[in-house]
Amino acid sequence: GDAKAMEFVGRDVASVFPGYGSKKWKGSVISYDRREKTWEIEWEDGTGSTCETRETMQAILVKRRSEEKATKVKKEKGEKKVKKATKVKEEKKEKKEKEEDGRKTKMKKKKKKKKNNRAEERRTVRSSPPTHPSSKKKGGSTSVNDSNAGTRRGGGGGGNRTQSSK
Image 1: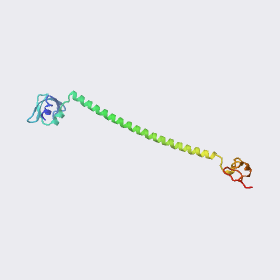
Image 2: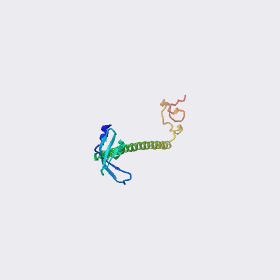
Image 3: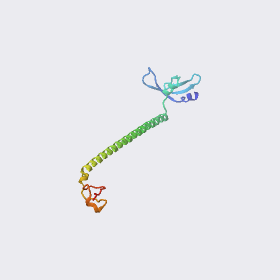
């Protein structure tokens, strides 16, 4: 406790006192009383006072330039971390959106391709001639026994044919 209490000795302080206007009075911590656990402060007008709590001392301390700079740097680093984290989040969100858009586009392309394939199949089916056996040429195919080709039954069509008996 005492070592930490001694760190305030020699430091500058500033405070506004009720009833004395808005002027910020400046002073210095001149000593620490270990027995009373109080700091002795001498103000710019020559008067003195005591401070009893560490919290009050920290509140009235005038920050040194190095402390101000360290606080500023710490704040800037914190802001940079926040900015970086925000940027990373935004990049992840954009990437996710692009992936979703890509999936949607792929799905649309697949659907379109399927639709086009179905339409092509319909066109192909419509433009093909009928395949009914009666529409085929007669005599165009060969029989099992070529010598009896004229004696076929059925009048045309393909496939295995039977010979008629004589």
